[in-house]
Image (cartoon, rainbow, N blue to C red; front, side):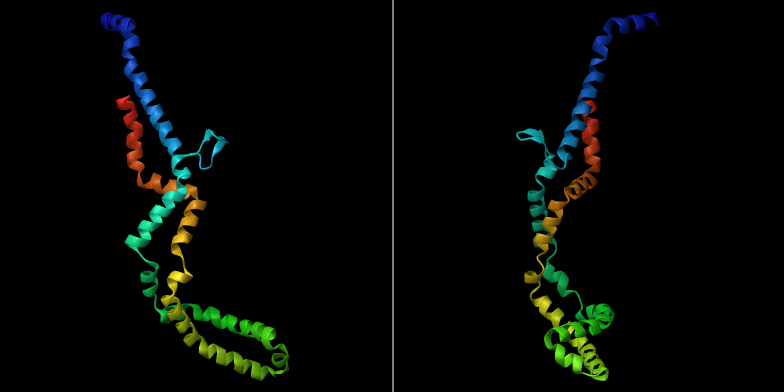
Length: 194
């Protein structure tokens, strides 16, 4: 026992080197990973400051990922073509029927208020019933027109890019979720390789 104690006391500076190196390796890897993702916004006075690498490249990453998704995985035209106009009409018809009276009143007040106000209530109700009866056909035609022009109407690429650019924390979350095991390995490997 005295031999081990004597050996340790005489050589402890050399014996703790691997542990100190491991701690430094682990610590620098943890800091490097944190600096990759944080802070989300630039802190400091340029050029002296820092913003996480991922958040600083949010625009570029958003464009690349959305380009890949929209060109290789899914297109808006394909998704929208799978929607059934009849099903959409069925889903939104109760809300539109509820709004038909209000919309008809507003349009008629704006376009022909004297005529509309002079009509008896029975005639107004007839107009509203005619409009309600035409709604399924109008909605179906509208959906067909939207299907043909969906790329012009809905720019999914711009929507997705702006959403990802506005929410840099979301990009961080995507990376951290997908690479969780790998990031843990990098943290721990700093100790072993340090």
